[in-house]
Length: 326
Ligand code: GTR
Image 1 (cartoon, rainbow, N blue to C red):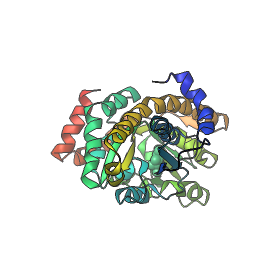
Image 2 (cartoon, rainbow, N blue to C red):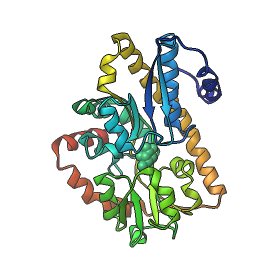
Image 3 (cartoon, rainbow, N blue to C red):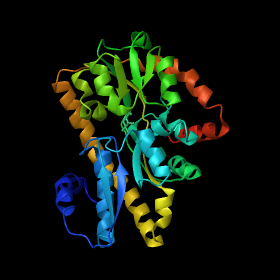
Image 4 (cartoon, protein in one colour):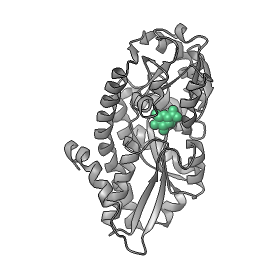
């Protein structure tokens, strides 16, 4: 396992390694991500690909198409299911409607902290979610951090849910996130990630919600100048491979892939912790106003929504397991 220093130093070295010659029989697998190059999820999947290439003498490679070059998260999930591309890295929010077990981890205030989220996603609850992807042509490889999502907007600081009244807030296309927006009294507008910046600029929406790294790397902070620490969802990220691609790999290649995907999680977390810290500093330095909120009021406003989604016994069990690890 690389140390924190090796991870942070290794980003440059990875670029050099990827230009070396490969054997003619090399198989290149395509991976999609909506984030820009340098974003921790993009770099973690690249790192996984490098390990795979090194371990197979360059026979098996991964090429990451970042910045949404291959389309919206919804589209890439379908492409992976049908084997048009090998991997996609998407947020749980994009999986909520089709994969019920991804719902619990995005519900408001289910996790108490990053440490709690990591414990649960590294443990049996995370395993159960990953196993759930098998039902629809996918293999769940690993779960990455996504920080904690907060509300931000172009108009005013939000201290309590009433401050969101009348604001058009972009949410990911997930029934749960639409429900969160409604429960908080906002006017939720589902849009894909790539549309958010221009929608803020043209006033199609007044705000959105995300983690601070995405707020910064997507440059939305240039337009939305009020960030409010609602911390309403830890909605993690999933790395998925097509069942078709996976089944075509030799058994030893499958083992290597599963192993390097697992090892890319701590690698990603080192990058993530630094990325979050840097993003917060940059956003503050640019003059964005960051304020704390009455979090119990946000939790109270969304409690009914959680109760409705947890009506399903399987989701209730997963929820109770996660809460048991708080
Ligand atoms: C980010 C996540 C992306 C995307 C985005 C969104 O936090 O990393 O995969 O889902 O949120 O809100 O669409």
